[in-house]
Amino acid sequence: MKILGSLHGFHRIVASLTMAAMLAFGAQGAMAQDATETTAAQQTEEVAAADVAQASSEDVGPGADAYTPMKPTEGKGMPIAKAIDVQQQFSPIGHQANALHIGLVWIMVIISLFVLALFVWVILKYNKRSNPVPSKTSHNTLIEVIWTVVPALILLGIAVPSIGLLSAQYKSPPKDAITIKAIGYQWYWGYSYPDNGEFEVVSNMLSKEEADAAGEPHQLAVDNRMVVPAGVPIRLQTTAADVIHSFAVPSLWFKLDAVPGRLNEKMLFIDEPGVYYGQCSELCGARHGYMPIAIEALPMDQYNAWVLAQGGTIAGAEEEEAAAEPSAAPLQQPESAEPGAPGAGAAPVAPTA
Image 1: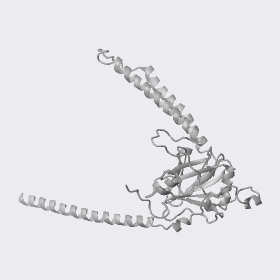
Image 2: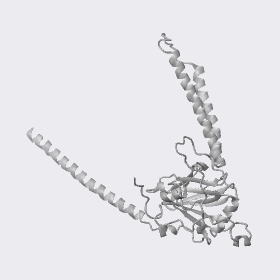
Image 3: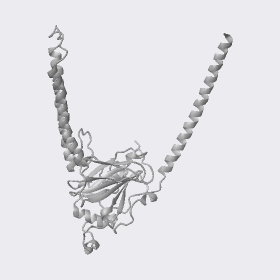
């Protein structure tokens, strides 16, 4: 018995030493992995601004640095503090979706009040004091049919407009729609204009100081917006250069994934001129939260002037009109990859108290 006890104690000592060794090597491995990840992250953060600038077209019209961004309207196309509902919509599909949303809210309210009334009625009528002799009824065919058929009819009523909304959201744009391509990069957006000369602009997030100076919301404001015409159909295409991103603008009820090696497209229609903000809504890496979207919708004549200011072309325009000076001020910086801009160089830093 003493021998067995000694062997048992020896096994415990060996097991303890083995466990300690595993923990030690595991900690060293974790530290080495952390060091490797830190080095990789630092290498990623040290991307030169010049490299990012290569994503932007060099074919930019003269005087394109005279751009004065449209002033955003407070509460329009942006989130509102302490809001409890979806953002106000500025697209036809947004109006349709918002109407369904409101209808569903009222359906939920009515059902909730009905169920609450049933609870109160059962509590008051069938408590022990009011009903000392409990009913022994176990089945009621009529009630069972009602509570099966009525919910099914409600769901059917919800399904019809829901399917209609899904179909409308992916309706193909018309042939004459203006094509604009949004390319997701780590971590900024590039906007290409295939129908207007294939020029591209790069969009980086502004710092807090720059956003405050411009009177725009922090972490939504960018140096170069995606400029589009208002009141006309747009064929918005999305793709990505590295990982999956997602192009999402809540006030336009628009969301479309940007997948490397794939071209997705959906119709975008903006009711009126304005500035509309969004963000990448697909977790795409360390600086996912620093690639906002800002869309500036302009009247068609101002949009054409902006295109010409970028060195782009207008389909069907007369040769002399294309060579003439634009009637509006140029509307885009030639490059947006400014040194130190989030997504173009140093990583954003949290403000200090």
